[in-house]
Image: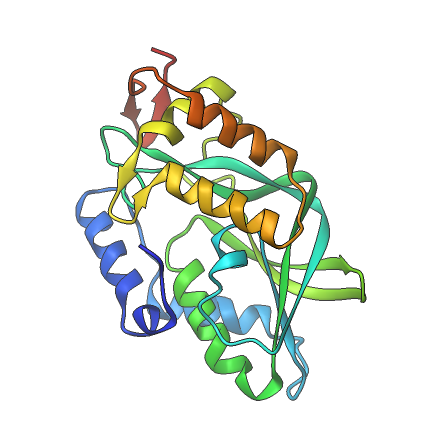
Length: 238
Protein backbone atom coordinates (compact mmCIF):
# COMPACT_ATOMS: atom_id res chain seq x y z
CA UNK A 1 0.00 0.00 0.00
CA UNK A 2 1.27 3.46 -0.95
CA UNK A 3 -0.19 6.32 1.05
CA UNK A 4 -1.61 9.04 -1.17
CA UNK A 5 -2.43 12.64 -0.36
CA UNK A 6 -6.16 12.00 -0.77
CA UNK A 7 -6.05 8.88 1.42
CA UNK A 8 -4.37 10.83 4.21
CA UNK A 9 -6.87 13.68 3.92
CA UNK A 10 -9.74 11.17 3.99
CA UNK A 11 -8.56 9.64 7.27
CA UNK A 12 -6.87 6.41 6.14
CA UNK A 13 -4.05 6.79 8.66
CA UNK A 14 -6.52 7.49 11.49
CA UNK A 15 -8.46 4.33 10.61
CA UNK A 16 -5.29 2.25 10.58
CA UNK A 17 -4.28 3.69 13.93
CA UNK A 18 -7.71 2.92 15.35
CA UNK A 19 -7.36 -0.71 14.23
CA UNK A 20 -3.94 -0.89 15.91
CA UNK A 21 -5.40 0.70 19.02
CA UNK A 22 -8.10 -1.97 19.18
CA UNK A 23 -5.35 -4.60 18.94
CA UNK A 24 -3.72 -2.99 21.97
CA UNK A 25 -0.58 -1.78 20.17
CA UNK A 26 -1.23 1.92 19.70
CA UNK A 27 -1.89 4.90 21.93
CA UNK A 28 -2.65 7.58 19.35
CA UNK A 29 -2.34 11.28 19.97
CA UNK A 30 -5.51 13.31 20.22
CA UNK A 31 -6.48 15.79 17.53
CA UNK A 32 -5.61 18.65 19.90
CA UNK A 33 -2.21 17.12 20.74
CA UNK A 34 -1.41 16.80 17.05
CA UNK A 35 -2.44 20.37 16.29
CA UNK A 36 -0.56 21.70 19.32
CA UNK A 37 2.58 19.87 18.19
CA UNK A 38 2.40 21.57 14.82
CA UNK A 39 1.69 24.98 16.37
CA UNK A 40 4.69 24.56 18.65
CA UNK A 41 7.04 23.70 15.80
CA UNK A 42 5.85 26.73 13.81
CA UNK A 43 6.03 29.13 16.77
CA UNK A 44 9.07 30.93 15.35
CA UNK A 45 8.17 30.49 11.68
CA UNK A 46 7.70 33.78 9.88
CA UNK A 47 4.36 33.83 8.02
CA UNK A 48 4.80 34.25 4.30
CA UNK A 49 7.97 32.16 4.16
CA UNK A 50 8.48 28.64 2.83
CA UNK A 51 8.97 25.63 5.08
CA UNK A 52 11.30 22.74 4.29
CA UNK A 53 10.60 19.12 5.29
CA UNK A 54 13.37 16.49 5.38
CA UNK A 55 12.52 12.89 4.48
CA UNK A 56 14.74 9.85 5.07
CA UNK A 57 12.38 6.87 4.46
CA UNK A 58 9.17 6.60 2.47
CA UNK A 59 8.76 10.37 2.78
CA UNK A 60 11.66 10.63 0.30
CA UNK A 61 9.96 8.69 -2.47
CA UNK A 62 6.31 9.19 -1.55
CA UNK A 63 5.97 12.59 0.14
CA UNK A 64 2.18 12.69 -0.49
CA UNK A 65 2.14 16.47 -0.08
CA UNK A 66 2.54 19.31 -2.54
CA UNK A 67 5.98 20.90 -2.72
CA UNK A 68 7.65 23.58 -4.83
CA UNK A 69 11.23 22.29 -4.82
CA UNK A 70 13.28 19.33 -3.65
CA UNK A 71 16.98 18.86 -2.95
CA UNK A 72 19.05 15.94 -1.74
CA UNK A 73 20.95 16.76 1.41
CA UNK A 74 22.80 15.64 4.50
CA UNK A 75 21.78 16.00 8.15
CA UNK A 76 24.31 15.57 10.94
CA UNK A 77 23.39 14.30 14.39
CA UNK A 78 20.97 11.57 13.32
CA UNK A 79 21.18 8.38 11.27
CA UNK A 80 18.70 6.17 9.42
CA UNK A 81 18.07 3.05 11.51
CA UNK A 82 15.80 0.02 11.77
CA UNK A 83 14.92 0.80 15.37
CA UNK A 84 11.13 0.50 15.65
CA UNK A 85 8.90 -2.58 15.92
CA UNK A 86 5.76 -2.64 13.77
CA UNK A 87 3.05 -5.07 14.93
CA UNK A 88 0.46 -3.61 12.56
CA UNK A 89 1.53 -1.67 9.46
CA UNK A 90 4.14 -4.11 8.12
CA UNK A 91 3.90 -6.84 10.71
CA UNK A 92 1.56 -8.62 13.11
CA UNK A 93 1.52 -9.02 16.89
CA UNK A 94 2.94 -12.55 16.44
CA UNK A 95 5.61 -11.45 13.97
CA UNK A 96 6.28 -7.71 14.14
CA UNK A 97 8.13 -6.03 11.34
CA UNK A 98 10.88 -3.46 11.71
CA UNK A 99 10.56 0.10 10.46
CA UNK A 100 13.05 2.85 9.77
CA UNK A 101 13.35 5.95 11.88
CA UNK A 102 15.99 8.60 12.47
CA UNK A 103 17.90 7.84 15.65
CA UNK A 104 20.52 9.90 17.47
CA UNK A 105 24.11 9.97 16.27
CA UNK A 106 25.90 9.93 12.94
CA UNK A 107 24.55 11.46 9.76
CA UNK A 108 21.75 10.80 7.28
CA UNK A 109 21.35 11.55 3.58
CA UNK A 110 17.81 12.19 2.42
CA UNK A 111 15.56 14.56 0.53
CA UNK A 112 14.47 18.06 1.54
CA UNK A 113 11.18 19.41 0.16
CA UNK A 114 10.24 23.08 0.11
CA UNK A 115 6.57 23.91 0.72
CA UNK A 116 5.51 27.19 -0.83
CA UNK A 117 4.41 29.95 1.59
CA UNK A 118 0.76 29.88 0.55
CA UNK A 119 0.58 26.09 1.05
CA UNK A 120 2.37 25.74 4.39
CA UNK A 121 -0.73 25.36 6.57
CA UNK A 122 -2.54 22.81 4.39
CA UNK A 123 0.48 20.72 3.42
CA UNK A 124 2.01 20.56 6.88
CA UNK A 125 -1.35 19.43 8.22
CA UNK A 126 -1.13 16.50 5.80
CA UNK A 127 2.46 15.77 6.88
CA UNK A 128 1.41 15.81 10.55
CA UNK A 129 -1.58 13.54 9.86
CA UNK A 130 0.83 11.08 8.31
CA UNK A 131 3.82 11.21 10.67
CA UNK A 132 2.53 12.47 14.01
CA UNK A 133 -0.62 10.39 14.49
CA UNK A 134 1.07 8.11 17.02
CA UNK A 135 3.72 8.74 19.65
CA UNK A 136 6.76 7.23 17.93
CA UNK A 137 8.27 10.46 16.63
CA UNK A 138 9.31 13.86 17.84
CA UNK A 139 9.33 16.70 15.33
CA UNK A 140 12.65 18.55 15.14
CA UNK A 141 14.22 21.40 13.19
CA UNK A 142 17.47 20.28 11.56
CA UNK A 143 20.06 21.83 9.28
CA UNK A 144 20.22 20.16 5.87
CA UNK A 145 23.38 20.65 3.82
CA UNK A 146 22.60 20.62 0.11
CA UNK A 147 24.60 21.40 -3.02
CA UNK A 148 22.75 24.72 -3.20
CA UNK A 149 23.42 25.71 0.41
CA UNK A 150 21.99 24.87 3.80
CA UNK A 151 18.30 24.92 4.66
CA UNK A 152 16.46 24.60 7.96
CA UNK A 153 13.93 21.79 7.76
CA UNK A 154 11.39 19.94 9.84
CA UNK A 155 11.94 16.22 10.28
CA UNK A 156 10.80 13.40 12.54
CA UNK A 157 13.11 11.46 14.87
CA UNK A 158 12.38 8.45 17.04
CA UNK A 159 11.36 9.11 20.62
CA UNK A 160 13.51 6.66 22.56
CA UNK A 161 10.88 6.61 25.31
CA UNK A 162 8.39 5.15 22.83
CA UNK A 163 7.34 1.68 23.93
CA UNK A 164 8.08 0.08 20.54
CA UNK A 165 11.51 1.67 20.22
CA UNK A 166 13.76 -1.32 19.50
CA UNK A 167 17.18 0.18 20.15
CA UNK A 168 20.15 -1.70 18.71
CA UNK A 169 18.79 -5.03 17.52
CA UNK A 170 21.39 -7.60 16.29
CA UNK A 171 21.70 -7.49 12.51
CA UNK A 172 20.69 -11.13 12.03
CA UNK A 173 17.48 -10.52 14.00
CA UNK A 174 16.72 -7.43 11.92
CA UNK A 175 17.23 -9.39 8.71
CA UNK A 176 14.94 -12.22 9.81
CA UNK A 177 12.09 -9.85 10.70
CA UNK A 178 12.44 -7.74 7.55
CA UNK A 179 12.56 -10.84 5.35
CA UNK A 180 9.48 -12.50 6.84
CA UNK A 181 7.12 -9.91 8.36
CA UNK A 182 4.07 -8.44 6.63
CA UNK A 183 0.96 -6.53 7.70
CA UNK A 184 -1.84 -4.25 6.55
CA UNK A 185 0.49 -2.04 4.51
CA UNK A 186 2.50 -4.86 2.93
CA UNK A 187 5.83 -6.53 3.63
CA UNK A 188 8.91 -5.14 5.30
CA UNK A 189 11.00 -6.38 2.40
CA UNK A 190 8.88 -4.40 -0.05
CA UNK A 191 9.44 -1.24 2.00
CA UNK A 192 13.20 -1.87 2.01
CA UNK A 193 13.23 -2.59 -1.74
CA UNK A 194 11.39 0.68 -2.43
CA UNK A 195 13.67 2.68 -0.16
CA UNK A 196 16.89 1.35 -1.69
CA UNK A 197 15.57 1.75 -5.25
CA UNK A 198 14.70 5.38 -4.61
CA UNK A 199 17.98 6.06 -2.83
CA UNK A 200 19.62 4.93 -6.06
CA UNK A 201 17.30 7.04 -8.22
CA UNK A 202 17.98 10.10 -6.09
CA UNK A 203 21.72 9.51 -6.13
CA UNK A 204 21.81 9.12 -2.34
CA UNK A 205 24.49 6.72 -1.18
CA UNK A 206 23.69 4.55 1.84
CA UNK A 207 25.83 1.43 2.04
CA UNK A 208 24.14 -0.03 5.15
CA UNK A 209 20.74 -0.02 3.43
CA UNK A 210 22.12 -1.79 0.37
CA UNK A 211 23.90 -4.31 2.57
CA UNK A 212 20.67 -4.94 4.47
CA UNK A 213 18.77 -5.57 1.23
CA UNK A 214 21.37 -8.10 0.09
CA UNK A 215 21.08 -9.94 3.40
CA UNK A 216 17.27 -9.89 3.32
CA UNK A 217 17.14 -11.22 -0.24
CA UNK A 218 19.49 -14.04 0.72
CA UNK A 219 17.62 -15.00 3.90
CA UNK A 220 16.15 -18.50 3.77
CA UNK A 221 15.64 -19.20 7.47
CA UNK A 222 12.49 -19.49 9.56
CA UNK A 223 10.39 -16.65 10.90
CA UNK A 224 12.02 -15.29 14.06
CA UNK A 225 10.67 -15.93 17.52
CA UNK A 226 10.01 -13.62 20.43
CA UNK A 227 7.39 -12.37 22.84
CA UNK A 228 5.75 -9.20 24.08
CA UNK A 229 6.55 -8.27 27.66
CA UNK A 230 5.15 -5.12 29.25
CA UNK A 231 4.34 -3.81 25.78
CA UNK A 232 7.84 -4.39 24.40
CA UNK A 233 8.93 -7.07 21.93
CA UNK A 234 11.75 -9.27 23.16
CA UNK A 235 13.31 -10.84 20.09
CA UNK A 236 15.38 -14.01 19.98
CA UNK A 237 17.56 -15.42 17.24
CA UNK A 238 15.73 -18.73 16.83
